Image (cartoon, helix red, strand yellow):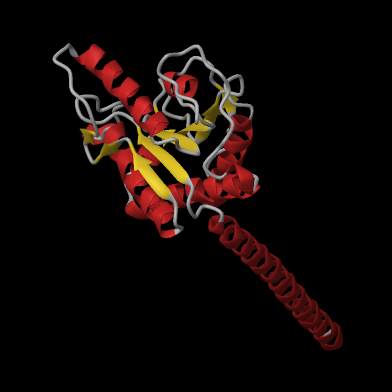
Amino acid sequence: MRNVRVVATLSGAVWMRRLAVAVTVAALLSFGLWTGTRVRAALGLAAAAHTLRGRVVAIDPGHGGIDPGAMGPNGLTEDSVVWGVSERLAAMLERAGAVVVLTRAGDAPATGTTSQGPVERRRFHLRQRVLDINAAQADVAVSIHANHFSSPSERGAQVFYNAQRFPQGKELAVLLQTQLARVVGGTRRVVSEHIDHYFLNHTAMPAATVEIGFLSNPEEARLLTQPDYQERVAYAIYAGLAYWCARLPSAARGGVTVPSSPHPHTASRP
Ligand SMILES: [Zn+2]
């Protein structure tokens, strides 16, 4: 009886040791693969970020001034959340040597004024922002917004584009969406074409609109107010822009091809 018990105990110890070794090996392999992937991604991004130097990147922090945009819990407004991400993104791009065009500073519209009502004033400011971006001859433009839906369970960042205006817009959107999923997580959404969107319809360069999350989702709204989360969202957009600029032929620097447009506000490059 004692022998049987001893044999059983020894077998258990051997099994436990083998399990421990297997777990350790698996953990080391996983860590090595994870680290390798992270290192490769970082090296890739460092090289890609180098191509941002000299690029003109327009950032449109959605809403602002008289237009707070969507409302979240506890008086949270879309314009403040997207400004937090936009100013972080602008700083990252400038550190990489890009020329950043922001369509507003803080809570105030960047330019222009009108004595008309709030709806017309909102339209005026949106038109003015697009005019500013086109006048700056940006290489790429990104408008940053936060989403809102009737169901509080909806969540996740999503990027929109208009490939009818610029076929490259879809590639830009996919790169941004991929980086948002990789860096921020919490989204299974895929890029979507949006052909009835003033910003995407009238910017004279490849552009995307990034909905960084849902203010109608209490958990996501809470995250979107946190500085470190805003930093991650900004970093994801920065990485997407870097990878997109890295794919541009160097001859296109300062001269992305612009299709002809019937709209009077759009301006082709000289
Ligand atoms: Zn918005």
